[in-house]
Length: 251
Image 1 (spheres, rainbow, N blue to C red):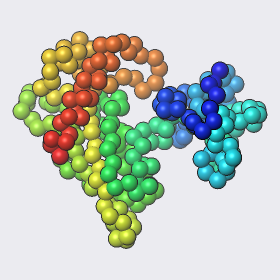
Image 2 (image 1 turned 90 degrees about the horizontal axis):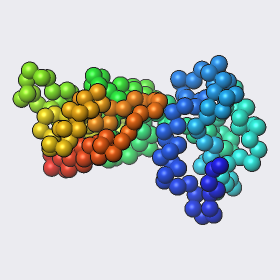
Image 3 (image 1 turned 120 degrees about the horizontal axis):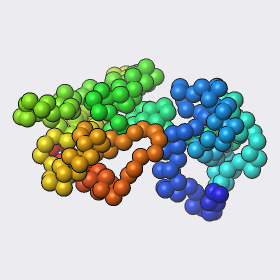
Image 4 (image 1 turned 180 degrees about the vertical axis):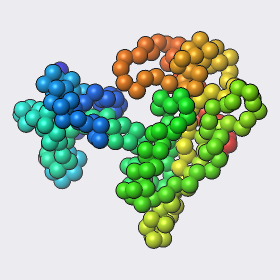
């Protein structure tokens, strides 16, 4: 049973984080399938939430916990009729559209953006980044130029001295897209990984969990259950802390 929204409090941060991981959903953006949506709705495999529309359509409903009549939202999920112009909107995992949330930040013309790309990318193919850049270029007409992105890669085993970095800077060219009416933005793109100079606790964790930590300490399957114990959590947290401390010193 869902926890009721208290007056004047709104949705909690924990609930927001939980919704952001609602990967199993009848409505999954361009991954949606009519047949699959029908079956998932029928068997109640629905991790998304119905929340009041923060726009004009949801005026007067924003503090409520959800629709009072569930049949209409259920039918909307089942037959792919969800929209953003009704009093309530269906909110699943944002990664169904774009996994880094970079698209929305650029759309809002944010000038300083920090992106941490900790998705499952063992081959450093930059799938999530490429998806975001394509959509930003096509929909928003904004280019992003990166500096030293070639260093964001796996260290070759035969060349331990090959330069490698955890992050790079990018220039978001708002000025070109807006005809000079906007100032350019700065993007700090962070790509967690292992480069061989980690502290012993992190190095031992990576070796013991080679299938998970050989490339990313957060290299877990995108969907499905995964055994996340204290060692994995500790190793990932320490790795992220080390990387975060390096960014301001190197920028």
